[in-house]
Image (tube, rainbow, N blue to C red; front, side):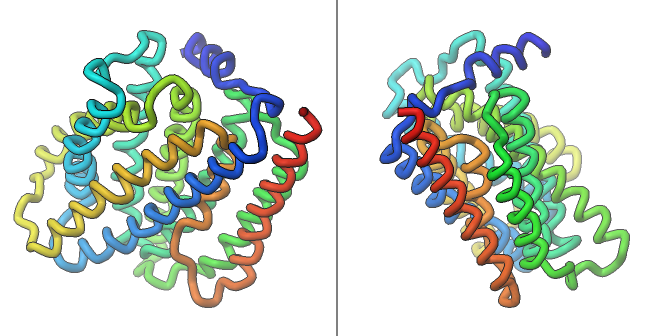
Length: 308
C-alpha cells in the first residue's frame, strides 16, 4: 500500500507550468458539464424509490451493470482492440476505482430515503471537495494554498446555507445514519477523483471508466443477490435506471475524465458543488459557491501565468 501511495505521489504530481489557461478553461467546462449530468442522479433515484419498492444495492448494481456494455463498446471503438489491457502498475488503481465507484452508489442511494435528496446531495458534495483537497495535498502534492483553503471553507458554509437542515428526516436516527452514509459517499467519491486523476493522462477517458464500472458491478452482484436483486421494476423504473446508467454514468464520467487531464482535482471537486439541486432559500449559499469557483479559476490562471 505504501508503494502505491508513493507511486500516486510521483506519477500524479504535475506543475502549473505544464498547463495553460485555455486548456484549464476547457477542462473546467468539461468538469462542469459532467457535474450537470450528475445533478440528475438524486432526483432520478428519488423518483425510482417512489415508483418501485427497491433498495440501494439493487439500484447501484443496475446503474453500473446497465452502463458497462455501452462503455465497453465505446472503449473498444476509441481505445482499440486492446482496450482491456492496462499497465501492471495501474492494476491497484483500477481496483480502487471499481471499489470506490461501487461504494459510492450504495452509500449515496441509501442516504436519499433517510434524509432526502437535497440533504444527501449537499452533505455528499460538501464533504468531497474538502477530502479531495486534503488527499491531493498528501498524495498528489497539489499545493493547498490559503486561498483554496478559504474557498473550500466558504463552499462548506454555502452548502450549509443551501441545505438549511433536513426536514425530510423522520427521526434523529435517520438524520445521523443518513448523514454518515452521505459522508461515506463523499469519501468514496474523493477516492475516485484521486485515482482517476492519476490514470487519466495515460488512457482514453472512457477506458478506465468502463473497466472500473465492470469491476464495481461484479463486486456489487453477490451483495445484490444476497438481498434479493430487484428485477420487477415498472416501465418508469427501468427508464430511470437506463437514464442513470447512460447519462450521468457513461457520458458524465467520460466528460469528467477528459476534464481531469487539465484540471487540478481540488478545483474539479469544487466545481461539482454546482452540479446538484439547491433549495429555493439558498441564494446566499449559491453566491458563495459560485464566487468560490470564480476565485479558484482566477487564482489558478494567475498561477499559470506566473509559472510561464
